[in-house]
Image (cartoon, rainbow, N blue to C red; front, side, top):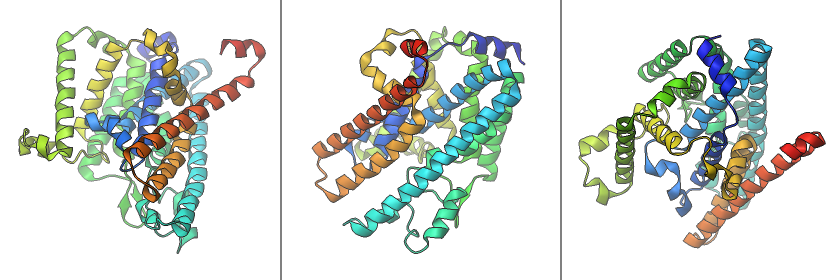
Length: 380
C-alpha cells in the first residue's frame, strides 16, 4: 500500500462536512425534481456550472475510499471489495424496488387523474401498452424514468470502484491519470451507456467516474489539498471563477443579463453538458470545494448547530432519503399541476417535502441506534 495513502486513511476521523454536503445535495436534488417550483431557484445548479449531482458523486467517492480503504488495511483488499459489491447490490435492489413502484404509481396517476400527459413527462410512455417490456428493460438498466438517473448512475460507478480503490491505495496519481484518460476518451469517441431503443443515459458513467475517482484521490493523498490552502492567490482565482460561473449561469436564464456578456463567451459554456461532465463543470466544482473546505474546517462550530442536524442526518442516510425524495417530488409535482400552482403552494409543498425527508432520516437514525448495545447507544 502507498505510505501516504496509509497515513491519511489512518489519520482520518469523523468529518461532519461529508454528511452535510451529501445532505445539501439530497435536499437540492429533491427541489430540482419539482418542475416549475420557485424553491428550486435556490439550489446549487442556479449559481454555477456544477450542481447537486457533482457534489453527490464526489463525496460518495471520498467516503467509500475512506471506509473501504481502512477496511482493506485492517482485513485485506478482498474483504473491502466484497463489501463494496454488497453496496452495489443494495443500490441495485433499491433501484429495482423504486423503479417498479415508481412507474406503477405514475401509470396509475396518468390513467386515473386529470394529468395523463405526466406519463410522457416521466419517460415511461410505453408502460400502458407494454408493461412487461418496460419492466424487463428497467431491470437491466435500459430504461430511465425521470429522476432515477442519478441512482442508476451510482450502480456502475460503485461496481467499478473496487478496481479504482485498488489503484488508489497503491498508485493514486497513476490511477487518477488513468481515470482522466478514460474521461477524455469517452468524450472524444462518444463512449456512453445506452437506453432502449436509441437513447443515452442522462449521466455518462465513462465520464462521471472521474469525479468519483477524484474524490477517492483527495481522500488518500490529502497533503496536496492542505498545502494548497495556504495559497491566497489561488483562493482569489477560485473565487473569481465562481463569480464568473454564476454570471454566465444567470445570463443563460435571463435575456436582460445575457446582453452584458459576449455571445462568444456564452457559446463556450452553453449548453452546460451535464451528460458528459463538461470540463468547466469539474473546474467549477473543484473551485467550490476548495473554498468551502478553507472556509469551513472540520472542527467548525457551525457543524454542531441543531439547525444543521436535519441536513447532516439526511446525508448520513443518503440512500433512503434519495428514494423517499423521488416519490415526494413526484407527489409535489402532481399537486402543483392538478391544483392552483401559486408561489405560496410551491413553497409549502417544498417545505413539507423537506420536513418529511428530515423525519425519515431522523427515524432511520433512531431505529439504527436501538439495535446497538446500551453502552454504544448512549454514545451514538
